Image (cartoon, rainbow, N blue to C red; front, side, top):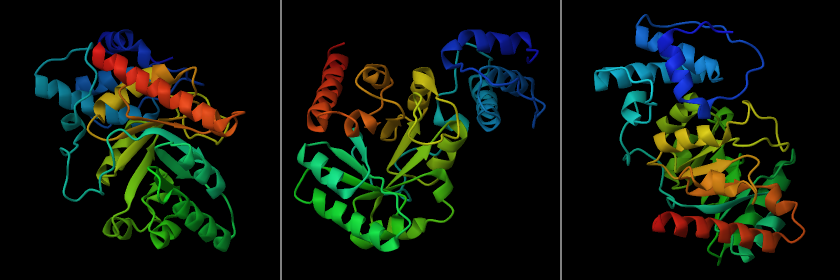
Length: 304
């Protein structure tokens, strides 16, 4: 266990909604000598933040405390200036997409894209897996054709070259793809860019690219892919969404009709689902119910 200073313990006590279980006690290391930074680093590690996120937060805690001229354990860094973020919009950023992308269906092939476009799902992602380059090109082109004449916006996962060739609306990339993708070419072509993030450090990396939207997760446990971090939970999602509130935001990871309202209260403008649609007995009906739930939540929020 970490031996906490009283100030660090005060932060932990005030922000238990951000805590997630740890497999083992973390090793505490410091890059600075300021006491506020050290208190915050201890607290963030004790709350279960991974090292790079704890470091990012501790730096922001120090900046926030210096800006406000006092230490307040009840506060939580939620101002971009404390993380070194530039204000939005930025001339060098990617083309804009709607602030609220609505229901965002992540789909395995072009046939599913066509089906959900016809069903009126506002945002779609083709996540097609194949080692055959020609099969990938064919699937991307078919998916782009499938949304023509509909209101659905289509993002292509990973296959950015094929998305460029097919003149897709946008691409979605993971952090691991940023070094290999031709970011300037995507931007010059006017494609929208969505980027994945799994915590504070990755959100700051995503912000440097000025993407069209930022995806945040996994919110809840998911068996669809191996995640680099533990499920973040709705408490952290609220904190992430508050900090990144000027971006279009997409929550992803284990979301379905049972937990949708807990996600929507964070303020995100979009919720990505996979199995809630593809594993449903009637995907069209399932998507319609999810869209209705999201619309009802927005109506209730406006009346509140």
